[in-house]
Length: 436
Image 1 (cartoon, rainbow, N blue to C red):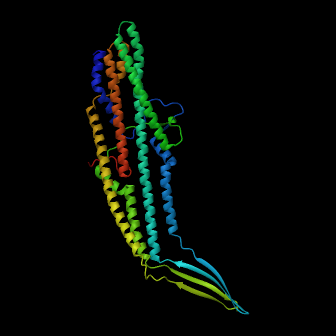
Image 2: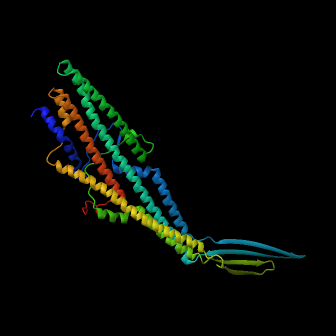
Image 3: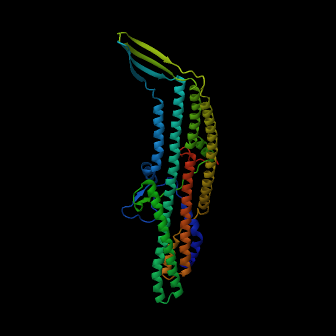
C-alpha cells in the first residue's frame, strides 16, 4: 500500500482511534504529560493543590467561615449566665434639728427557669449546626467551580498544543511548497492554498491561546488572587472517573448533602424556638439580697424576691411566630429534599450518558490503536509522495479527532465532579458500583 492509500485509510479510522485513548486508561493512573511544554517559572498545580490554595485564599470561603464563627459566638453566649446587679443607695433624712439617714447595698440576680435555658441552648446549637452545614454546602459549591475551571483550563491547554502542532506542520509545509514550486513539482494554486491554510490555523491558534490565557487567569483568580495567571498551569488529569450506581448516589445524597443537613438543622432550631417561646410564658424571677445600715446604729440584712405576674402578656404572639417559623422550616426542608433528589438524578443521567458514550467508543475501537496520521501526511508531503488534498484532510481529521477526544474527556470529568457535588462527596465505598 503506497503512502497516499495509507493516508486515505487512516483518515477513516483516526477519530475513533484517538477517542479510544479517552477511556483506555484505568482510573487513578499515574500522571502523564499533556499539551504544550510549560514555560520556565510556571507553577504546575495538581487539582488537590488548587483546592488547597483555594481553601486558604478564597474570599467567598472567608465570608462563609465568618458566619460559622458568628454562630459559634452565639452558642457560647447562649451558655452565659445573666450578670448580677449591684446597687448602692444612701437616703439622708432631716426634720429640724434631727438628722437621720439610711444606706443600702443591694445585690440582685435574675434566675432563669431551667426549661427556658435548655430550650434556648438547643435552638442556638441547632442554628450553629445549620451554619456549619451551610458552610460545607458553600465549600462544595465553590470547590466544584474550581474543578470546573481547572478542567476547562486543561482543555484549553490541550487545544492550544494540538493547534500549535498543526500550525507547525503548515509552517514547514509552506516552506516546502515554495521549494516544490521552484522545482516544477507543485502548482501555484497549491502553494497559495497551503499558505491560506497556514493563516487559517494560525488565526485559530491565536484565538485558542487567548482562551487558554483566560482560563488560566480565571483559575488563578480562584486559587491565588493577585498572582500572575501566566505562572499557574493545571496538571493533567489521567484515566477516567469511576462509575457510580444511581441508588447508592441517591442514598448517599440524602445522608451527606450539606444543604439538606442545613435544612434539617433549621427545622430542629425552629422546633426548639417553639419550646423557648412557651417557656418564656413564665417570667424570670429576680432574687435580691442586701445590707442596710441606719444612722442610729441599727444594721441588718434583707432578702427579696420579685416575680412578674403574667396577666396581660403570656407570650402568645411569640409562640405563634415560632410555630409559623417551624412550619416554614419543615416545608423548606421538604423542598430541599426534592431539589436534592432532582439534582442527583439530573447529574447522574448526564454522567451515565457520557460514560456510556466513552464505553461505546472503546468497544468499537478495541482492536486498533490511534495512528499518528499528521506525521505520516507531513512526511509524505515533504517527500512529494502525496497531494495537497491528503495533507489538508489529514490535518483536519487529526485536529477534529484530538479536540473531540479532549472535549469528551473534559465533559466526563466535569460531569463526574458535578455528580460528586450533587451527592455530597464520594469515598471508597461508592466506586465503582453498578446498580443502575
